[in-house]
Image 1 (cartoon, rainbow, N blue to C red):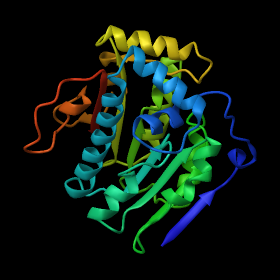
Image 2: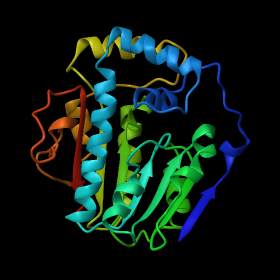
Image 3: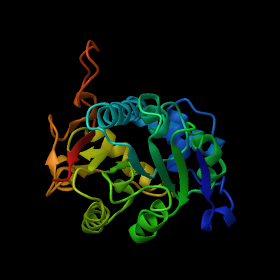
Image 4: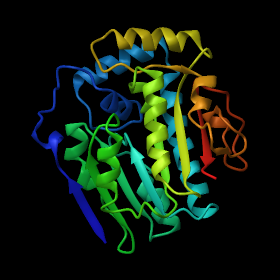
Length: 270
């Protein structure tokens, strides 16, 4: 069993409670307690304009759960690299994966000091498996890969999880380049899971997001469905492709869900 944290730069940074932070606001929308009044204020201001953001947050989490379940139970994946993991809530990647296959190995990556302080909660692995937390920025894929290789065997198929993180990279070409760099290192049979907020679907959502980006918080850039789809170029998209996240392989028997302005997909590297 591995419970390890790699405390590097973030360990020496203080948590700024005067500025709202996306991970803490997301935690607030999901019903978590790891946030501050400034995050609640920002979250409430957002929901006042667009109450549907709470549905998006929960739909995003459900998409992640269903995707990991497919990867472990049907695709046979046993290794996960989850970048931009955020604060722990229900059904974290290792919890979903290790419930099905206890031997799964998971590396979480984030660079937020508050996430680092909660890393131990993330790192409660099964005895058969392993978890690690790496303090690194998505903008530094080489550092991420080097650190992940301490826990994962990157010569074996691995699932790369990028959930609501690529929107924080303002330059679209740079975001595509980072995804390509990460996937180029992973072998055939690896998978890429991406979900992000989408533009061109709900103008009220876009209005709320634009206002949030002007608040002083770290901005998050919505992208068109076509742009999100191009992140999967060169890979084999699994059915049903890139769709609104509630429509990606919904649980059997679940009621039909309305689409939300967040799209995602899962693809296999040939």
